[in-house]
Length: 393
Ligand SMILES: Cc1cc2nc3c(=O)[nH]c(=O)nc-3n(C[C@H](O)[C@H](O)[C@H](O)COP(=O)(O)OP(=O)(O)OC[C@H]3O[C@@H](n4cnc5c(N)ncnc54)[C@H](O)[C@@H]3O)c2cc1C
Image 1 (cartoon, rainbow, N blue to C red):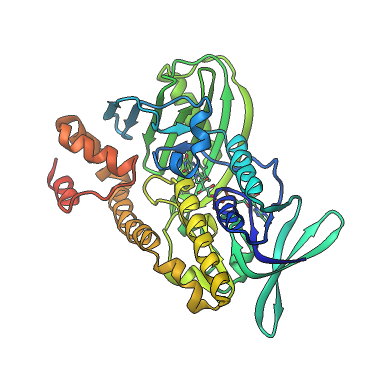
Image 2: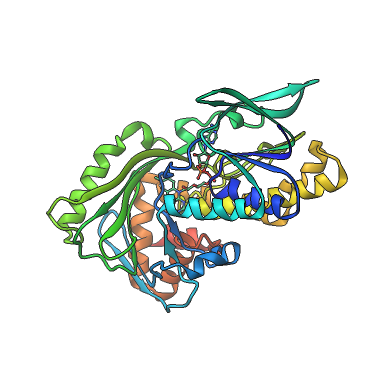
């Protein structure tokens, strides 16, 4: 089968990329391991821009979030209520969300190949000219001028691409997440974060009864702690806080999964005939662990880059470098580098600087707003942010 572009992985990055290319009239194959896979994720989308990328979401009945509560490991609390608009943060169930955005790509003309596991490239004269997949009926081959690797954190293609090293435990976060259902005392319009010395815990209500709950460890802490045990402890702690009830909850879904956590390297993004996007490339914010937004933006720009290459008939690294040179991608790379420094600072001495940060939040409204912008909305903090925290007692 011969395509203009083959996209491996129909998550947020792959579906957006395939949609953009198909809309321009090109032939796109969208390869997916399993459309019934619910990507392990908190499902939190704090960005108004999601409604620009997917106006379809506006019509759906998501609970619009207007309340945030964040707790430091030593008990300081930040609470914030904001105005409700039609573009407030939302929490999605990834099975529903991924199906919705995949269907947008299919409506635009992308061809879906489900139950296909991408595992290697097809080479001709040392050039990547397609991918091989495993299916229940044997191996399949998809030829294309451009290959977009969007099959997430555990991508076999990204590992074989020669563009980057395999992730090590020191480069990632490991999270356990569940969707539980039952009576609770959570504010349905809220999102809750509990910072810990190992990473953080979250509770994101989906509706009155259902909520996504999880814990995540980062870097060295992946080797020190067992995320399953931390999750059980966090669940009990949430019961003790009276946010959750002592009664058992119905477990709708439960999973443990890693996410990239050290940011994106410009040199790992493209080469002759290939672009890496989303988690496969590392587009996850080091402070918030938020990756849906980065996946959609990188997928979108990889789509536009592919269209230009197809128009010019040039699929070399030189032509595809438009992706990594795009101002939005450059901004993300810069922001993540900066955020990584902050993460190192926050978690120094078992998270002592995080505790100090939240103590300062209780003392200053202005500082509180900065912390919300940095932690929730992924913004760049002011230059004196670290020195202020260092100087506090
Ligand atoms: C525990 C946890 C909690 C998180 N919480 C949040 C959050 O609240 N908000 C947020 O913004 N981000 C969160 N993230 C990050 C977010 O889930 C990812 O950054 C995002 O899903 C990346 O999108 P993607 O399209 O790049 O990859 P994925 O969403 O991983 O999509 C990849 C797709 O490729 C398919 N695939 C995989 N392997 C193959 C293969 N070999 N062949 C074919 N198809 C394949 C998969 O089935 C999947 O559909 C969280 C991550 C974790 C681990």
